[in-house]
Amino acid sequence: MWRAWTAWASCTWASAGPIGGGVTTVALVVPRAAVRRRRQDFRAGFFAELERYPGLAGRFERRCLVRDVLATGPFGQWARQPAVDGALLVGDAADFFDPFTGQGIYAALRGAELAADCLIPGLTPGARAPMSATMLEPYVRARRRHFAGKWALERLIGLGVGWPALAERVVGRLARRPDLADLLVGATGNFVPARRVLAPSVLARLLW
Image 1 (tube, rainbow, N blue to C red):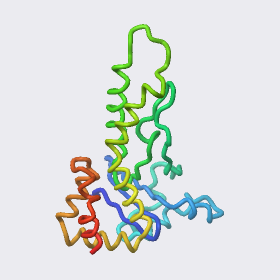
Image 2 (image 1 turned 90 degrees about the vertical axis):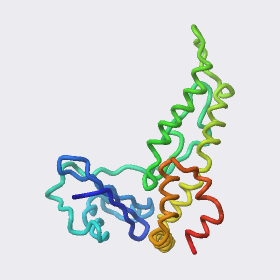
Image 3 (image 1 turned 135 degrees about the horizontal axis):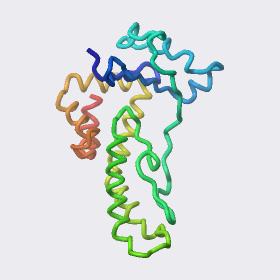
Image 4 (image 1 turned 45 degrees about the vertical axis):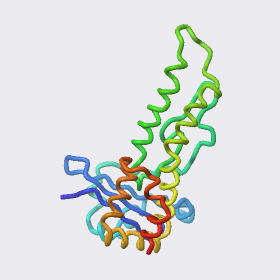
């Protein structure tokens, strides 16, 4: 029986997970430069690329495909101004969280709560003028206060995913230190403060 699975090879990573009805969704994330180097459509080599991963090799065949391979991106974009006169950005529209860390849904829902905390007090009956960027500044500050640690942690994890030797070293440490693995999962799962993982002593234990 399939369970969620993630691994990387070179500068790419793949994930697979069952979605019911005997269907498994498979995602392949590659650097933009790798796509640009190929003259043919990268989707044409999707199944061949999966063979690079021991956990996926031989498990998928093109004839079992239930829908066309889709390609999209790049997603690595961050908004410099999450709020302007009359508008604010929430979730992926405001900041990109690498799907490897699984924080995107939480960021969207928590960001919406922060937006509501800012917007609701400013709503008055009969008001038609849009809220100014100054009025939306509390939302900007709340986002920065709530997500700053997660932004830093996500960037570090993204660095590790793009550097296979470093990723293998950290994974090896996590396999030998379940307490560190639990701490990292707790931070990416949003029930442990990210600052606990970002402590120099913890970062050192992840490498040595």
